[in-house]
Length: 423
Image: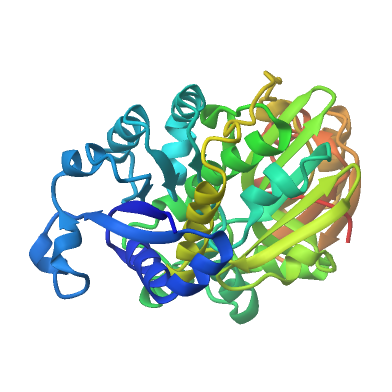
C-alpha cells in the first residue's frame, strides 16, 4: 500500500488537531482512500516545547529540510499570517509539492499568484479550512454546485462577532461587555480588530465570491464595516420591526457587476440565518438549478478546522494532479459600494417639534429614497426616529443623509444599518 507523506508547517491549535486526526484515524483513512497517510515532518519554532507531544524525530526548525525531501507529497500550512507562510508555500509549489492551507488572509492577498503557480506546476492547492471551519462550503461551491450559476452567497462567517451580537440581542449588554465575555471564553483575540472591524469576514468573502462567480475579487474593493457602532437600542428597534441583526458577508452577481460587501445587516427574524447564534457559522447560497441552500456548523475551533484540513489532504491523495485548482476564469466587474442596492435602517435624533418628520421625509424624497416604515418612540429631547427604506443605491442614501444632517431640527444621525429582505 502506498504511503502518502505529509509535512505540517506549525503545531499550534489546528496543527495539533490535524496530527491527532491522522494518528487516531489511521486505519479508517487507509480503508477509505487505499493509501496510508503519514506525518513525516513538522516545522516548529522550538523543538523542546513540542517533544513531549509528538515523536521528536518528526520535529524540525528548518524548512529546507522539508522542502528538499523527495518523499514528502503534500505540505500543510497551518501557521497563519502571511509571512513566512507565503514564502514557504511558494517554495513548496516550486519544489513540486501539493499544498493545503487554512490561511484566509494569505489567500485574500496572494491567492491569485499561488493558485496560478499551482496550476502551472500541475499541483493540487486546497483551502477548505480557510472559510467557516468545519463547514464544507468551498468544496460545495467548487464541485457539488458546479452545475449551477450562483447568484448570491450570503453568510455569517465570523463566529466572534456572531457571539457578541447574540449576547447583545439576548441579554441587552453593550458591545464592550460582550467583547470581554468573548475574550474570556477564548472566542476573541486580545486584539479583536480583525473580527470586530470585519476584516476576517472580508478575507473569507473574497474566497467564497471568487469561487461562486468564477471571477477573482479584489480585497481592496470589498466594502468592509464592522460592528463597533451597534448598540442595544438598535437591536431593540430592529426587533420591533421584525428584524434580527447579523454581521453578514454578502456577494451578489448583478447585470451591472458583482457586489461584495461586509457589514451589519438587519434580516427578517424568520430568515434561516437569523436563528444562527453564538459562534456558529452559516452560509446561504442561491443557485439557478438547486435553488436555496444553507450550510451550517462550527466556524472555528481545533477539531472542526482540523477536520477540513484533513479533508483536503484526503482529496489531494485521491486526485493528485488531476484537477485545475483555480476556478477564476472570468474578469467580471466588481461594483463600488456606491452602486450597490439595499434597504436601510436609519436612526435619527431630532427635536420634538411639529413638522420635523415632513422635513426629513422631504430630504429622502428629493434623493429618490422611498420609505417603507417610520417609528417614533417616546417624547422629549431628543426624540428618536427610526426609518426603514425601500431598495435604493448607496449613493442616493448617502446624499439624503447629508441633507438630513444639515437640517436645524436634527441633532444627529445615530446609526445606519443595511437591511436584507422584508420582515
